[in-house]
Length: 469
Image (cartoon, rainbow, N blue to C red; front, top):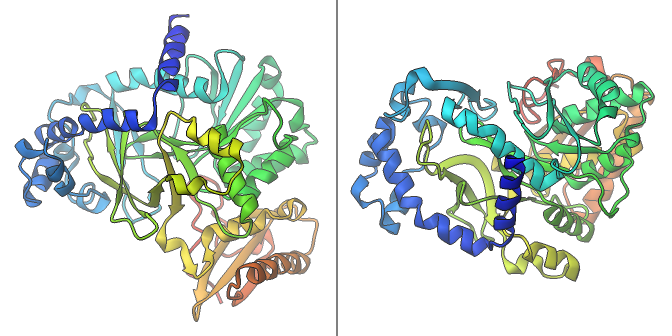
């Protein structure tokens, strides 16, 4: 009961905040966070010295902006773990290790937590769950299917950490689900599709229970959310409907650093309706009291590299100004223009700052063609999406995109027919955007797909890379 009251109080306090007030309060403590990192971490003190920044000068804003930008190459690939750890971290108190996906380089970064941090984790998770799903008001079962050892602890919800086992997750949903008033499925987009296919194959009525979803690990476009709505029997705009929202963490920094809300989802969907063929940025809130955000070297549109500084002065591995590899911009008033007044008012009511996330430059293949555009095309037609696994490989030949697609395990339509239907969607998009046509589109039977028989969902699927002839 005490923890519920504490959550109620904290959320009430947050609702009275404004984005500017939160940013101002966080900015006031930023110098102390960097100074603490310099004092506690030999690796960070070395990097500061190489950048010509004295720890004593970190309270000055211009010195903070000169502080080095960190990434895997100049931290985990350069320094030993002993050099990266805070000097005051007791080795006998280390409690958990979480790796990055290893998707962006040949090496892994990782986050370490000591027992004091680990003891605080359930409270932080429960605060987020109450904010998004009202777990204090509904008996809740959370089924976590994220890969790579990501686990959840909660004192407000019943948790099952099954990783990428659709059979186990389905058994828990079917047999234990009726004990609860709502379900929260934590998935990545590919496994989320596999799980829904698996349930459908067994004749299970997913609409019979209140099923929310937290979607992480990779980005998706709004046709994917449309697909989930249809499969879960959720009517668009339905009052009090389950939430199908995205969350983003960074293995080296923490979970759920960025999150969608009903307001940001409505805003993104309104942008999609207005411009249905162009990919839309993911619209995330964040709490600057937990994670300070910078947009480094923005272009004319305000889009730059995302830098994150965790505001906890006790971070086990201090990593100020850590570059995640994502391209982002901060929401501006002009970004709301032309949308319905209710959508604009919803965004202005948010107590948190808002970030528009555009993904990674390396996923841009050609003008008007980004990896996320191909993700979107797969779900434009829900009946067609059911014939696909969700996995594909894209690349370029002579500057034109090539798209190789994997059919579903139990596809009931010939690959040539799937190919024709996808080609029709591609043609519509090319006409709408005056985009260059694809150099090749090919659909493979599930077993013959040459890129993903490692599609075991244990790690992020690599959509871009070397193509076969």
